[in-house]
Image (tube, helix red, strand yellow):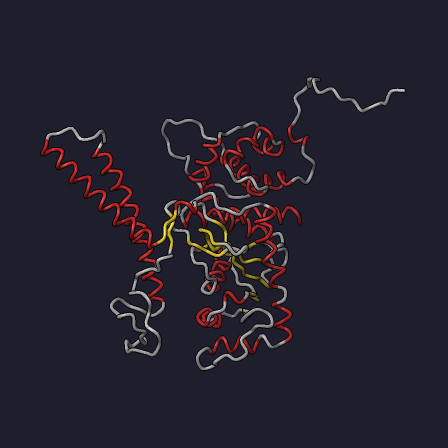
Amino acid sequence: MTTSYLPYQPNQAHLLPVSAADWLPEGHLAYFIADTVEALDLSAFHARYAKGGPRNQPFHPQMMVKVLLYGYATGVFSSRKLAKRLHDDVAFRVLSAGNFPAHRTLSDFRALHLAELSALFVQVVKLARECGLVKLGTIAIDGTKVKANASRHKAMSYARIVQAEAELKQQIADLLERARAADLAEANAPEQDLPAEIARREQRLAAIEAAKARLEAQQREADTARGRHDGDERKPRHPDGTPKRGKPFKRDFGVPEDAAQTSFTDPESRIMKQSNGGFEHSYNAQTAVDAERQIIIAAELTACAADSGELPPMVEAVERTVGALPQTVLADAGYRSEAALAAMAETPLEVIVALGREGREQAQVDAGKYPHTAQMAERLKSQESQAAYRRRKAIVEAPNGWIKSVLGFRQFSLRGLEKVRAEWRLVCLAMNLRRMAAWA
């Protein structure tokens, strides 16, 4: 007896057109993102197309925003992959409703509307608060290093920059002398386009000199923060300028270490240590997460690897985004600094910042020199503060892990601090939409 199967006729044509929405189950993330985008204010997107004049009809901003947000929420960040998914993936086809923008169109839309896409983060956080998913009772702050869109093979150390600068200047001088000699002798030089060679080396020299200036400017800024100044003769000095004890500095003011590097592809990125122990051109991405449903309520980004100065700016970002302050702020030992704690002491918040890894806390703190750090050390002795701080890891480190491991976002697509900061907010916006869909 033959086995009976359910009907399967792959070549059977449909007598009536089908709805693509019938191919997605109820409660699908694509439906949630579509409904959310329709509830957002997209007037800033439409304003860019309000000018008159002949032009091609653009794709509807609402459709483009839906496709981009769903792409980021499902780990599709490349415009080429997004364009391919519009043909291959049912969810993308439902969101695009029969539109198939090319990858260049998607890329240009993201670049043109980057500020507007970043601003949607605030709208979604406020929407989450209206839905009761953000309570602002306890929040936790953490930073994570995300690789920049910069090739490690297109970076150069300060020592190599100085060497390359001298070599290029010598090569340009030799070529100029050779050109002058050829003109005087009216002889045929070897087949070489000397003006083009000179222009190519001068262009390279300009890039080298710009990289050198960037490194020196960064070093001057770092030296100034350490209390140094031009002409200090490498001697440590008090704020009033009088010499103090200590070993002399190894380098003159504003002179970087030989190993200091800069990137030619993304000059604003910095070399940062990764969790695997390696070093990459990266940015320091900051998140503030609400404890209620682990919604990211503030997303900022800096080119400084240290977190020690980021606590007050992150609290300000929370107030800017949500319009209110939380009750309790938790942060790990990376955010510890006397200046940050002093700034937080002027706010009505309960701030709990670790002073070191558990079991390795500093035993004694000089209360005269570091009064706010000493107060934090006393606060951390109480059982209530210790219990509150233990929640930090579960609140904030999970969303950072989801962004890297679930969404697969480990490297920025854009370059430059402002563009990368906007892309980070776009990623956090996509992560929030996934969290909100799970609790809807």
